[in-house]
Amino acid sequence: MSVPKGRRTVLAGMLALMSVGPLAGAGPLLAGAGPLPGLPDHPPPRDPLHRAGELPVDLRDLWPGAAVVVRGEHSLVIGHDLAPTVLRDLAARADRARRAVAAIWGPVRAVILYPATDAEAAALAGAESTRGLAAMATADRVIVLPSGYARLTMTGRDVVITHELVHVATGATRGGRVPMWLSEGFADYVGYRDAGIPVRTAAAELAAEVRAGVLPVSLPGPADFAPGAPRLAQAYEEAWLACRFIAERFGEKALVRLYGGDVTGTLGLSPAQLTVAWRDYLGKELA
Image (cartoon, rainbow, N blue to C red; front, side, top):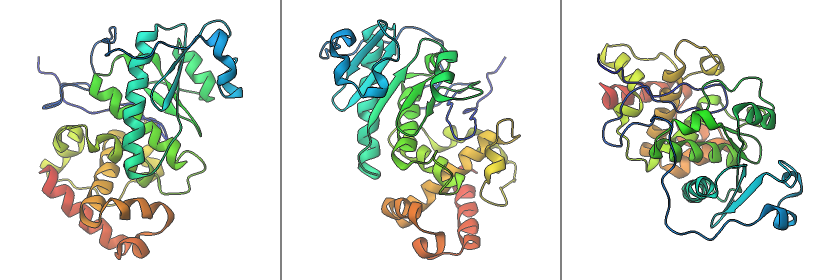
């Protein structure tokens, strides 16, 4: 039986990158759960029982006696009763993600929490549902969902952590100050920018529609990103490729400026003209 190609399932405002098939070129983003590979030597983790005073006040008593703290070059990872090797791997990814975000947006505080269970993660985030998630972003930190994160490949983990750090950096989860297609599309743009994943692979669902002669009529709106929306994966793919188009045609600085501006003032296009140009871009990239 052939394995269907697919990219992910995403819940509104938070990312879960869960592939249901192999990805050409970069390998699948979804893999069987298993132990993380070891990394090159890192400084040993600091003992949370003796170094708790060095943590932000609101993080000192997360898991008394069971917290494991690992510091990357510019990141802080706190896990609940987890092996330091696992957390060192995550710290290395957080450092890479922080550099990727800083290169396009600016500095971001990389604080990652890795709870022992999904239920613990939901409680930390105040989320009612975490089904299908690999990680979540709050205003100032990223929270890992153990079950979803464990299923991601190495590339998938990098993309997810980078995506969520973009949300932290931009404040995209605070009240919808920018269109959702822009906040989610920009987070994906940064996440995929250096991942080496072919466009038609990362946007597999949307590519299938385009090859069938079906192009979206408009940029995705809030309802398209709602949990259970019939074209949820395509909505994220549409948003990502809208941001990719803007960066390629107008430059990354213009894409960043769009956060504090509007389409016409920033790009010199009307919203209708942007839609037409974006649809043409989809046809060329995915057909």
